[in-house]
Image (cartoon, rainbow, N blue to C red; front, top):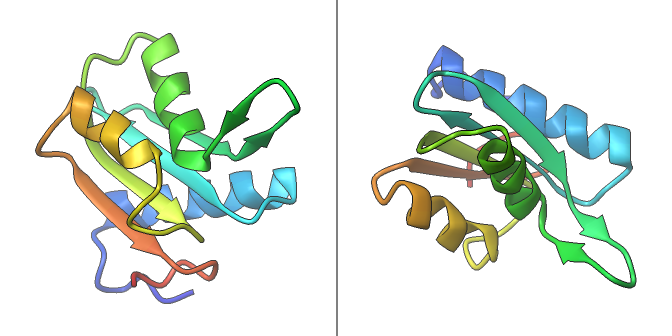
Length: 107
């Protein structure tokens, strides 16, 4: 994994997102950092009754845990048209959003 041009906190988000992706055996994973520095990770949810992208899952977990805003979000194995990006922007219009390939290299 090549994340040397990311700062340490953003590299941590990549590691968390990749771990969530691996645990769920999913095509993508995501992690977010809230304004207090707490982190939340998630993978895509694909149920017949509920569909969430990995980033939507991570944002929902953060909000459900009381996060009022986000500093940064990482999406591993996703794309710029991910439905979770508007959720990040709704919470924090200036939050950094990093999109990487499945290996964690920013695209």
